[in-house]
Length: 292
Length: 292
Image (cartoon, rainbow over all chains, first blue to last red; front, side, top):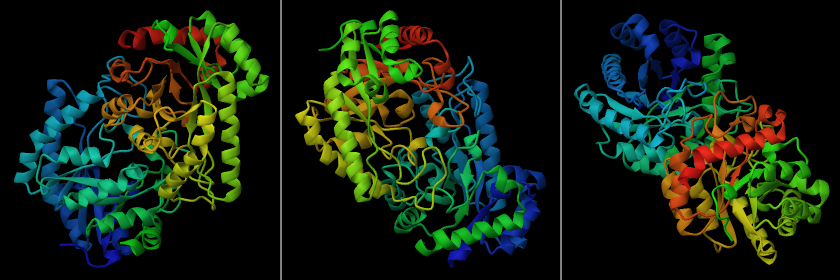
């Protein structure tokens, strides 16, 4: 069931208004005209998944995705068991809040500190880490299928390959998804992470043909980078990304779902949530909606 | 003519000892046992290319590459003319100093400030910028051929796609090189820029098959990133890169040339040049030489 108007296709990810609790986040999303919200697990867990589902529905919104499971690269038995357990809980939460897709950020090299230097225990074997992601995906797909939730692999910008995601391109995500039905494993197209990719148009078209585009997320690439580049994301239109080109590629690939804005930016987080939501909608209408 | 011992294959890029003039740089390189130096144009221009060639030869060293030409993405007539002119000068300098290869960093989106936010004039059309790189390469290859210099395309980490290089993967560089003979256009494999690439082994093997590996450069990926990530490069062994894996891939691809260490790091620049050169050699012997 796809949303019908461009405005109704806009979704506000709760991470964009990080200081707001879930009640406030859905309130400002509805006020600003969004059709959906993308939920982070912290906001869901604060109230419990059943109440989270109710809050979203009562605001007249839908859930575009649940962020995020993943962190699947651990190599020892305890890390593997913990990752599978945590992702099973995330799958259950996705089912309860009515998110068709659970976004997976697969994790970086084991024992790297996110955003920090390598530790003596850091395992530099990127190839093996990528194999373990495939193994954990195999562990999780049956459980997700039983719960009617699709696992959505999110490639992250290579800037995060060491510490957050060894999945670095859309093509790599599609190769990994290829062992499963499109209803079981999809991919996320997040502008911030994929805009630079010389194979982008080809990979988006392939994702569309395979029916695997689970989410189209918006966020602009700005410079200079913040000291932690995780937080270095700008409002659509304030950075270097050509959203017309990218959006037309996603539309041409047949994607008809929600378009979610997810910004990690400390300055934006400090602004009033309703103001942020309105800016996000204005940018969506200006830079993205005309190309959908 | 390939160097014969592992130690003799080590090359010190002058950017690693940025505070040293050319005379000092070749002195410390020779003292520390390097077989070659990689030259930046600023160090060459300070003394003139003929004298630069003499300084290197008198130290018993060879020139592994000249860094760098490029910045080919300008869209207006003046920018195009300036880029072609400047690269012709770089080709002449490469020929005079005896560098078989001129490294090209192709440039970012036009009118972006390196390391800075987009300007009102920033052109976000990445696809068109990439086409212009191909056009300028076509302009320059005949001149380079006449001078016996190979143009070596250097893909940069996608972190630099906006402001320094729209050439982001080794595969993309090979596609671009594919229109020319291997003696005319090669590619640079710089660990810092390519280590994250899921297609890395495949692209290195392809580069080797095609005879296009012009340079293998070393530099480790460290976190947290420096405020300007250009300077965020660590000594080999201090970061997240698996140099054994990467070096074996380059060796298996048949590369028998120099292995150049190029570090941009303000802390390393402040250290005495001889000490830096010795550390670079020690890391080369520890982490790279056994895999060559």
